[in-house]
Image (cartoon, rainbow, N blue to C red; front, top):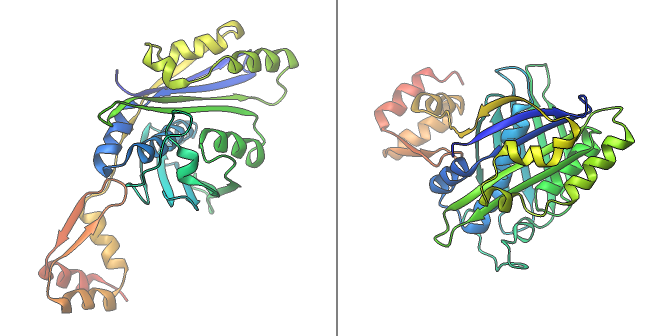
Length: 292
């Protein structure tokens, strides 16, 4: 199954919903970064949440960034998504290993205590930024708390990553269901009851459910309307010319020091782990372009 996001409404527009299958993009992230199982689960959940949240934005140039700084061994995560279903991300410590907790990967233990920052760049003078304390470190609950406190939007967020025995990704996906202002008590009660019946998003995917059938199960009695289906993929837009511009921006002094070392330099892209090499001659040309 190819990865995709569905956008939907229900309850006469009193509810909006997003659901996604992200197995391939999470596996691609695992391959790029060589993440341990618990790091794959943490990054996969944040990528899944990020790609759905990015799809909520309206303009082609809008960008969403989710940053987690934490005390646990994973140290932190960063995910960036656009409005077109493209997402990328990385963990600070991809090698973190922890024993399982209650038979599951201990994502909360890997993160520990910390802060989640969500930045929305929508082309305004200043990007919107909201910040919350991590509640559990399990990521879905933390995003639920973020929506309640920073955006005053009652939401239910479910995110999951299921691993194969060879540590590849077997299933990944999730949903975000939100109540719109003025939602009736009847709609709220019906939604809470249905969501309470769901124990594991990855189990639903593993037995053959799609984003559509998951939303149908939760919202079918409330007049579900699927509005859009959007491909989702792990995409990094780095290239050598972009890295070169970043190097030029560091200034003449630092570039000269690199030249004086007399060796080629290698620059790593955090998001996709690709390396770019620059010769001393190339550094010399950058020095001529640097303005400070």
